[in-house]
Length: 210
Image (cartoon, one colour):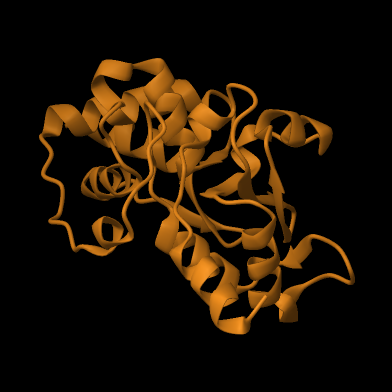
C-alpha cells in the first residue's frame, strides 16, 4: 500500500461506539485495547468475543475505528517504532495516546459515524448547576463501587447504563468539564484519564459539610 494512502487511512479513520459494538457481531472495526503498559491494535468483526478471548474487561478498550485489515496495516506502519517484535502489541507511547485522544469521543446510544470536522470544532465549556454536579458525584460513587479508579470512558458508559435519561447525551468532554467544576477532575493513571474514587468521595464530603 502506498505510504500516502496509509497515512490517509490512519488520519481519516472515524470512531465508533464501543457500547454498541459490544452487543455482538458487527462490520469490521480496528480496535485499540490496553493491557498493563502496552496497547494491542487489531481488527475484528466481533469485539465482544475478542475482548473475552484476551481475558480483558470492556474498559480495556481505548478506541474502536471504522475499518478493517487495510486500516490495521496503516496503523501498524504509523506506530512501527513502538511495535513489540512481530506482534499486534505496541508500547503505550505518547504518540499512540495522542492519536487516541484526538478520536476519543463518547458515541453513546445508537452507533453513528462522527465527521472529523465535528470532532475538531472547538466547543464551549459545559455549564452545570450545583445540583447537577452533586448528582454526578453521587452517581459516580455508585457506579464506581469499591473500585479505586475507573477510566473516564468506562465511567461514562456505566453512567448511561445507570441513568440513560440523565447521561445519554453526555460526551467525554461533558463529563470532564462537569467533574472539573465539581473539584473532582479526572487524574492520569498509566497514561490514561481516570475517575478517582477518593476524589469523588472527597468532593461529596465537602458538599455535605457546607
